[in-house]
Length: 336
Image 1 (cartoon, rainbow, N blue to C red):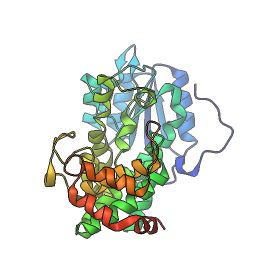
Image 2 (cartoon, one colour; image 1 turned 90 degrees about the vertical axis):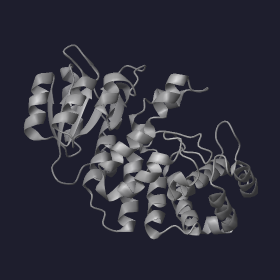
Image 3 (cartoon, rainbow, N blue to C red; image 1 turned 180 degrees about the horizontal axis):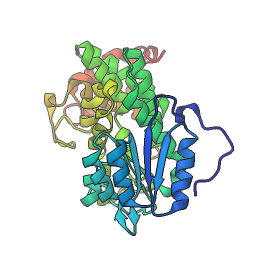
Image 4 (cartoon, helix red, strand yellow; image 1 turned 60 degrees about the vertical axis):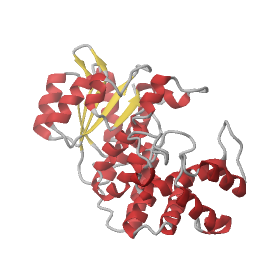
């Protein structure tokens, strides 16, 4: 069962828009009732069942906005069930729950399900946050640039995984990516792509098992393969959010390298969209300035020097030059 929390939920996890229908399937009736109660308290309309056939019939009849399923069930495989949901209710958000720490969301029927979020059963308290964040992104029209930035921040807050991907990191890289994109003489539309992409680039990590990020040492080949799927998952998530689709180019290509040794497409040079090249260099700059558990923080000059050594390999030389020319003072001013 979900633990009872006497505190009111944060506003970001409460649905205040039009009615949203959510379907919950689990072979454990206690889980179904607990999840349904938790989601109803957040303003969602919830139907729960332990019967896969009943769930399919309900999905055909009601066109749900979101469908949540357990993975391992005696009468059904959750991945197969969600694949069927993808066929009969293609616009529904698909969420997988699991208590199995070793499953691979990138292979077999799990890959066919093309889920929009994955929640471990030990972390079901986060389910409403993830659900509301994606539903908000799907339904908020966000007509102006400032509204789109605010919406992107709310979506990213709900879907964030690694500790360093916090609001401050997204704020810095969004401002700096826009500045570098402007300095690269990209158009206004591409500047917005850089800004929104910086905020939303890693939302696909909400489909990656949390244990992949909890490892203290190096990733195993299987974990690396799972994590490398997050750009595609991010594309799937944000493509369902009309107001934020400008971020798609950066989400898809932010792990591509100038020398063609990145992923998922092995793109090189100017085949990588300009907004992604602008974002990649400021993302690396922020990592160098802030430091990581495995590397101390560096000064501005040391960070720029490191980026110059990677120009033409990891990074676009022009983007590195623009970032360097901006200088530390201008980069600080951009955050105000």
